[in-house]
Image (tube, rainbow, N blue to C red; front, top):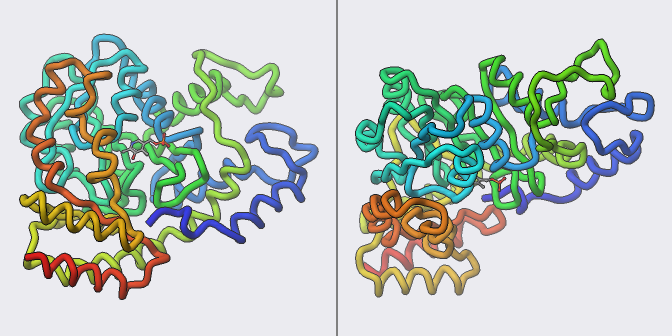
Amino acid sequence: MPGFELIGNEEKKAVEKVFNEGGVLFAHGFESIRKKFHVREFEKMCSKKFKCKHSLSVSSGTAAIKIALKALNVGPGDEVITQAFNFIATIEAILDVKAKPIIANVDDTLNMDVNEVHKLISNKTKVILPVHMLGVSADMNGINKIAKTYNLKVLEDNCESLGAKFGGKYLGNIGHVSALSFDFGKIITTGEGGMVLTNDIKIDKYAREYHDHGHENNKLFPRGEDTRTIYGFNYRMTELQAAIGKVQLRKLDSIILNNKKRYLALNKEIRKYYKIREIPIQCEPIYDSFIFFEEDKKIRDKIIDKLLKVGIGTKNLPDAIKWHCSNYWDHALPKKEVKKTKKTYDLLIKAISIPIWLKKPIEEYIELGRFIKSLK
Ligand SMILES: *Cc1c(COP(=O)(O)O)cnc(C)c1O
């Protein structure tokens, strides 16, 4: 599942190399004592891998969402439509730019229900913010169509599905801009970290300046005399994170491949006996979580018990449902938004998400599948 399982010697060597080549940990300047610019290299690698024109490394996925919203000129009075199965970070970023989060329920794919989005659009709506949850893409055709009709921007939160595709294209490269996360629970990790991807040079320019106190990195001037037109904040990534990120990115394809083998083994055992999370036909997921539904709480509890006993556990559903279902977020959302999401709550409460661990052999997943099947 996540990159932390495979973090080790190669990443350690990459960090050592940073020290051996001058030890500069800052992404900018210090040319006379450094050999490399790892943050800039990591960005180039991401652009190449995900086939998108511009990649900007930042300090976290949450920062990436906020920076993207700023770059889309979202502010007070604007509404941003996002979804009820989510992570609190999107809401925090929307609130941080003083805009209003509007919540759509999810459908059986556990991603944004496009039919609901239609009904939520008002003259204040500026952005649709779909979140590709736990390895699977939202219906990007449906979302892009609505965005086009109403002249809205699409910001993809692709923190949880890096490497997944929709219609043959990498997620994060389908809307106007997207946010990636490399925190320690994600498919590849730099400890903390994130990325803003876009094909729009104007979005990239604003994001680049905003994440670095407004610095334009004007080549005609030393950094201390750099030019500026906006003020921003500090959401920069360090060289150490990027050095690790470069190594982790090279592992992404093999992580997905090995996830898939385990996922399919489990799927083969139980698909006839349980309702499995739907995957849109245009989507190639990253297979890092196997999600299914069971109405009977007694059976659910037995499965969860077993998952804990064999050391696999669950991923977010149900163990961290309170951080991922907006029905619990009355500390951040207006009551009206919280109430609307009962439908999503009713769906998620019956869901079990099995994490796919690469350190667990496929045989363990087959065995687990047989146990789950035996309960029916
Ligand atoms: C992890 C995550 C984030 C935030 O990323 P951080 O790097 O931890 O700030 C945002 N959205 C979703 C859906 C996530 O899973």
